[in-house]
Length: 224
Image (tube, rainbow, N blue to C red):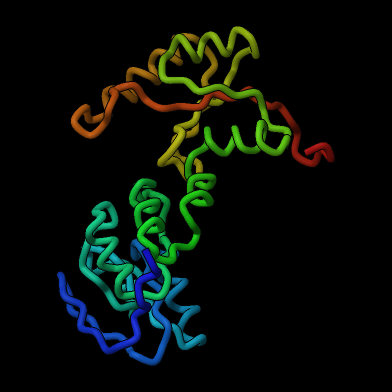
């Protein structure tokens, strides 16, 4: 499929709020409308670039800062496709967009930055560790995939307690990162994560985790 034509004519965007953007300026579509989208919008003004954010909320930070809004959900493929049809390029305010949706947009010829592979490296910790360690030989702490307390405990028996347990996806700014110091803590963690999962929204009720060797270091140590 050839790349869809960029947004090059006056357009009235429907949805939860009608917006207008210029025919003579490039348009950057932003999935989400939080603080990062607000900063992108503010930077775009001096570059004569229009921004169009995808959100259901009229009071998100980027909308309040003046970005045009296209009503829709970042988790809905049709809404993402509708945004992409109105823009020259699509980018992201956050990392919570379904990776398969990004891949589908790219396969259909839309310009998405960062692309699916770069986004996966940034949002899937297990994949990033595998690429860094096995793919290009960058030293990383010992790690393993885990979805049960027993797998965490098996790893700790080899590498010692404590261990660092992280959510493979949907964890950023420190979210989803825990230091676990015992087998009982591992069981408590997995039970709490299983309780929070919605079986209707997951192929499995097992959490997807990465367990890492705990690296002890001191601030100011030149080795780190």
